[in-house]
Image (tube, rainbow, N blue to C red; front, side, top):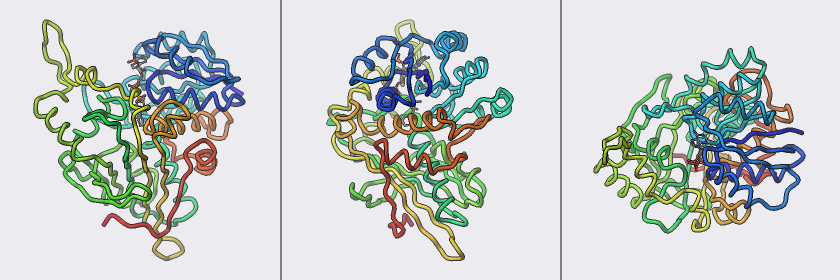
Length: 399
Ligand code: NDP
């Protein structure tokens, strides 16, 4: 059916490539390109036999012209961006110049300002519309599936959704004292930023990890959860009409937080460059270099993730509550594609988003977040491609 250019060769990319190759009728040809070509070659070498034709290439995606040249030579139908959020705009520019559809899993962030905002990418709406191409933003799990869950709840179970609580639990254990499950820089920037949630039409700001609760997760048990700002809150607060409150919660163990506190107290999480032996270096880049590579956690991680959304609102004049969630097992994910569940739960929805775009099911010129499309085909695909979901109409509530 089509050709995909996949940019980035980290943990998420490994899953996307494996899952695309499991669907060779849709992904007939793939070019996997990244800054370090050897990492692309290693992913390809790990693939089981597939009918999909796979090639690799080197590209610096900070350089729009390099991406344009690669697109012109490979001629893909879609570019799947699973590099870092810093590359979103340069890759979107290249897609505009060549007239190719675009998908990513995380919103643009300027490297020197830890700010998760869609404004830079939403500014491309008119340009994509005029060019007749689609950009699908945030097609991972959160953002991604959480937006699809929200659109599904809205479509099938609610006349009005009043509150959404997004709960992201990871009960995986990799045996290291401290490691992050995905890119350490992005992960630490997210956690050390102020918390924020949407209430009654405005944003309420908190200190980092100031609000804590305990939640008893299906199949995982009781966990400490902390309120964080997360990028899908911005799009959902606009796309779920009449919403009064949206909060995002993530689990962290005491051990993880103690390590993070120490690293922060000694300045290791700072993005401000310092001079070291005649070189400018951001401490967080050095920290990333000494921490375990998230891609290496796969074979060591045991346990499960549980990510989902609890909705409260009204249906047919009555109060309604709905909880929809996925449980993903780290070891099963590793057995299937050689990555732990965090990369798996991001890579599968990226493949599904790309599949729906290639099939023409999710395609309209412009720049869209996932909740702006019909959720049903995506929900069906989650069940088929490794992320089945469960639902409950009487969940335990947070308050
Ligand atoms: P990794 O750090 O493992 O991989 C990133 C890859 O991008 C690396 O291969 C890196 O190359 C490559 N890269 C970085 N800069 C460039 C560049 N200028 N040009 C070309 N390639 C480049 O990250 P993950 O796989 O963990 O995450 C990938 C994306 O997924 C991130 O944007 C992350 O924020 C997002 N994500 C989204 C989630 C969701 O649920 N929505 C959850 C988890 C992650 P090199 O190896 O040479 O450094």
